[in-house]
Amino acid sequence: MLNKQIYNLINSQINKELYSAYLYLEISNYFNENGLPGFASWYVKQSEEEVEHAMKFNAYVYQQGGKVVLEAIEKPVVEFKNAREALEAALEHEKKVTAWINDIYAEAVKQGDFRTQKFLDWFIAEQTEEEENADEMIAKYDLASKEGNLYLLNKELGKRD
Ligand code: FEO
Image 1: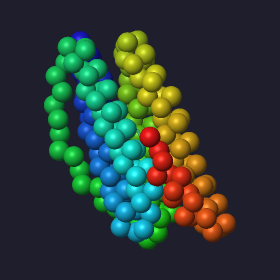
Image 2: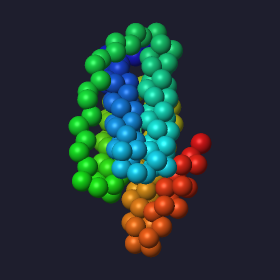
Image 3: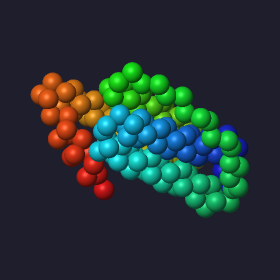
Image 4: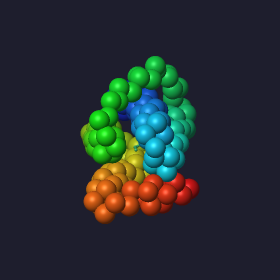
């Protein structure tokens, strides 16, 4: 059985991951509305990945004999002046997710919950990748804008599996 505080943090993380899925869907919609369907497709994949993250947490609660209590998902508030702002919002969001995962990990360490630490190891590694990807998207966008080949980058991003 999970410690109450760890349970609360994980239950809340399910909501945060689903919010992340909403946010990325919103970002995807922004790109679709602004003539960059390859970027839109990339963020749909990102949104799907966030749902998978939520499912991992959801399954873990049940593996530990707990019961998930789903909460309302906040409406993402996104107003971007340009594509770069959308990419920056994604990076800022991933930094927040990293901090949330770290908070759960810190609580697991405090409570001597080795099982949860082991479970969270995947997310710790994943967040390194998530931040790296988000950072790289900005760098690629800047490069493509400067060199005038945003069209090609848009095409490349559309190929994400
Ligand atoms: Fe579930 Fe992008 O962190």
